[in-house]
Each structure stands twice: as C-alpha cells, then as structure tokens.
Image 1: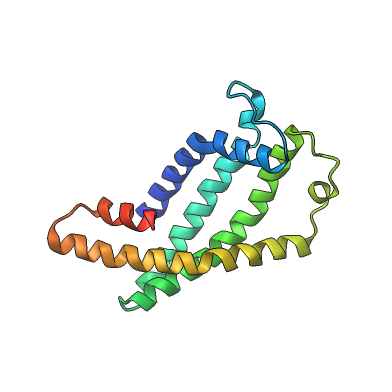
Image 2: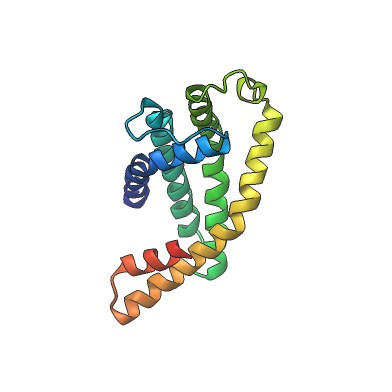
Length: 170
C-alpha cells in the first residue's frame, strides 16, 4: 500500500499549495472580490480541504490497487478499477467537500444562505450523483491511458513519471 500513501501525501501538498486559488474561485462564484493574499480569508477551509484531499486520495488509490490486483491485466480492468475507486473515494469526498464549502461561505458572509445551513441527504446524494456523472468517464479514460503509457514507457526506457505527466494532462 505504498502508492496510496504516496498519492495521499502528494494530494495534500498540492491542495495546500493551490488552496488560495480555490478560495479566489469560490469568492468569484459568490460575486465577492478576490481576497487579498495576506487576508485570513485566503486560508478559510484549508484544514478540511487538506484532510479531505488525503482521505479521498487514499481511498481512491487503495480501492484502485485492490480491485486491479484481482483482475487480469487489460484496459477494461483498468477502467473498471478506476470506476470502482471513484465510487469509493466520492463517498469520502462529498461530505468533506460540504464541510470545506461551509467554512469558505462562512468566511465570505454567506452563513444566512439556507443552502449552506441545511444540507439534506437528498442534496448530498444529488451532489454524489453529479460528481460521478462528471468524473467516471474522464477517470476511466485517464487511468486506462496511464496504465498503457506506463507499459510503453517501460518498453522504451522512459521514466514512469512521463506516463503520469501525459495521462494527468489529458
């Protein structure tokens, strides 16, 4: 289980480094001005975001590796593994994302918004379904491409990171 832990740590670093951009995007979506880079609002919700990033990445890669090891190597196995992993990680991600958004909205003065105060199980299920509908096809294609590139890189002697770079950019 080395890869899930490595992926989780990398996800935490990326989340923390890019978090000010996330806050700026949320502020724009709320029609608020960009927070100053020195403002405490720029870090609103970074704790829950980093925890969510770690937990989501670990759940994803642990499920991906577990499912993939029980299937014969093929593009369909990779697509099924990535889809199963996405189903597992989205269960972890959705409630943690709601917590992060609540902290961000609270810092931007949107606490009175009833959508932020009360989030029903129906809303959570809808968010879960929308997230899956958006990401399952993309993830299945990306990880199938990644595994194919990984094998190709091994044949021609390129570092494995090239496969991740190309698949990640797709």
